[in-house]
Length: 136
Image (cartoon, rainbow, N blue to C red; front, side, top):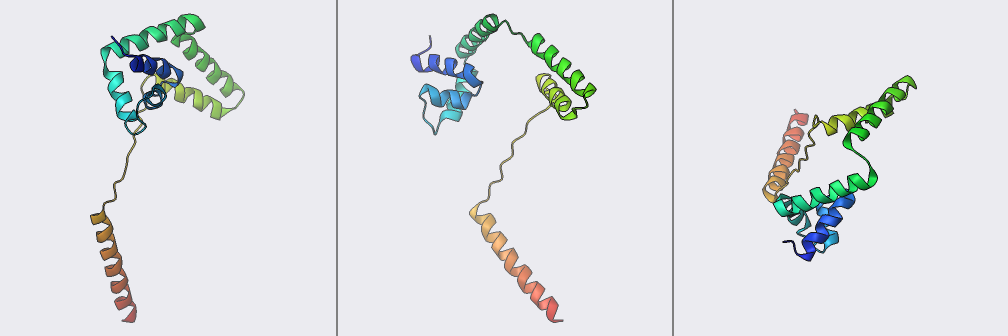
């Protein structure tokens, strides 16, 4: 059984399918929204509610994945004929994402105090070495 905050999360998740934003709008802490959203999406009862809400929306809008894919394919063909290649590329990109062909990777570089000290040492060494070399 879901509590009120969890029910609200499910409803908010359907707005933009972003767990972090949904958690914030549902009343979870700004600091923990990412972790909360991620954890909530793993719960089977939350998944079941979201699936049910998705099916309701699909029936209400009469929109299916097949329809969207066909529209994208039609858009791609028409764009190529009209020599609007950026639109054709975008349609193909969306189709590829749907098929899971592209994996988004996010990298974060952590720059620690130790890294900073090492960089300062290297910069000093390089400057000293360069001034010694230029005198010769």
